[in-house]
Image (tube, rainbow, N blue to C red):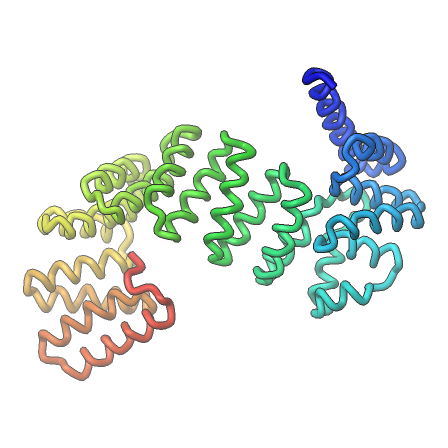
Length: 365
């Protein structure tokens, strides 16, 4: 077969799939089946097409043919849940394997309700993974996601959806993996580039985060959140001057946002530029008086300047605004210690240690 002929076969197969999916979404089951059959004749191992063919056969009243197609899917991709869920619908009973794999009856009911065709709804094969992830079952969702990705690797929506689900579950390596696949499939997807950058930030992959955020920026222009994130990555490298430049740019884009001046202030403290830092932190508090982090760093600055009254005031406010903000407890403990309030200092430092032990993060900012 010539290269041109091969390309024409691929194009025809893609068009067949698009037509069949469109028919399926519209509830035109009998019209959807031929396109799936045509695609499977060219590529018998394309699992999604076989699952969708089984679904339209069942919805057309051809239960036995649907079972035959699903048995082929089960042989090739036994880990995917959707065929099991569809079989349960066909048999009007949950299979022993489904109960074994999903022992929680509530979860099975949720998956059955959200993973199968209902009326004119079209459900892609990754839906069970998305549902599992949304219910907090991240280990099962990850296994289902990887199984689905193996049989449908070109499904960019799968990688986007699961990337978001794993990001919310703080499964950052898996989130980065999913978003990397999404941007490989769609290099101009600015949102996925941004999410990849955010995942890399959590993993402390500073250079990789910078590359991803810069790519998102090149595609969608300067966005306050993305520019702020770039500043944070540079701050942590560390490249403080470049971080400040990005924070200032974020402030220009969103003047009523307290985060840019707060982050400029704390970065200036690292450069020991105290007067400038105080000015920026006060500006952040003027914008948002409830920003505990800004009050914490302002209190730390006053502590360095030996102004215990002002330091204690700001740090007590910070703790009251955000009781789980470990850094505020640490600095407040130091302020109490210098003021001779030993018991209160001991309590604050114990709280700091407790929070950092529970969160595993000694420096959340």
